[in-house]
Image 1 (tube, rainbow, N blue to C red):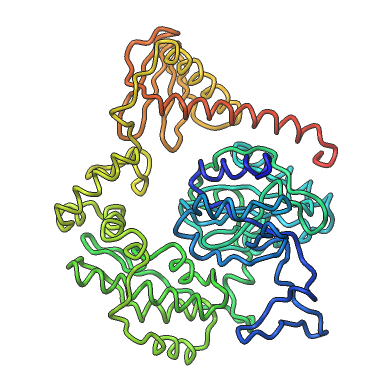
Image 2: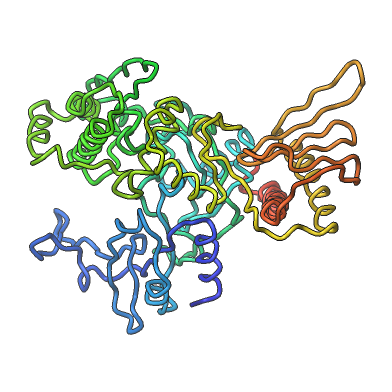
Length: 506
């Protein structure tokens, strides 16, 4: 495998993402896309549709013969080492991955959607200036001159986005569940390579709107006829009763909002209906109180998608045995995965109804994976997993702990330069308090006193100046802070590059 490809493969695997190959674009007269019956697909003018576009999961074998890859299985599992060796044996193969893993969304800003490349550059410069947090996340340039950023999103309900508010100019796509994206150092169809600007862990955001991405209203809120869609008003939650739509996957919930994440609106509605039926069955079997009915939700989703009512009824009738449907959570992760979903939505129900054996298995698995599913409240977000350290890790040395203190202060100072975190002043003491809170850690300083907290573990370090007064640090904490410092250093290098680029001057 080429060293530059190996770098991307290793990064993807470290992030828990599936590395997938990309074959170069091939002559469509030799390799046309085909219908199920084997006939070549053609455009109205008779031109063959290419099977290998240079942008889809595929690879050249060691003899240079192209092969397509069905990427659906890799939405739920990572490739094996044998698969990786086969896929990347030929030096001309590129690389990509999928959205949806761990709530990952790839933001694809498409230069073709702007008046000119210069207009795209200027709009990007403005956007990054308005949302400086984005300068801390994974960033690449595409082969055509566009941009690709990675974020993890708690709540994604649309794909086509605008940078100019709801209903504004279409600027690109937010590629989530099941969507493939090409990454550096792949050589694109234009002859230019994708270029990585900073390869760092994606940041977390609550919603796409919180970073200035908004739905393109023409797709999300209107029928194909141009008439406004009737979007369903969700019924209010009741204490001790789960809503069926809240149990469903994010992809099924997106269908309720009029999004079509699969190949067609009918496929998307069928997927959502099976998911709703699955949770309906599971809740009944486990005596979990639940409001909402699968068929009612499906009809509401059909209306949001703009599907004719008669077609919706035919889709309802197409499910041969609704009682055999299983929710995606159970299919992928078993019963424990379903009960984790209940825990996120209602701790009281989880404590009252989850079988003791399953609760014990969840707790044991969480400990093994540095995560805890606690019966109490989480520190940062109710839906967030709580990370803990491995009790069997070696104890960090004194020098390593001192490095951690210096890195914590550097992270705190750097993030405040970016406008992230809080600063308050105590009039009585004249001391300034600074704090920044992330997905796992909270760093706070008042004068020379420094405190670092970890979600689910409380204070893991307290220091007065350089003197550590108490700590329960692990090697995992040291590695994470070291990675964060490197990410901030990369960010500063990127900021210097952007500010010095003539094409990004506003």
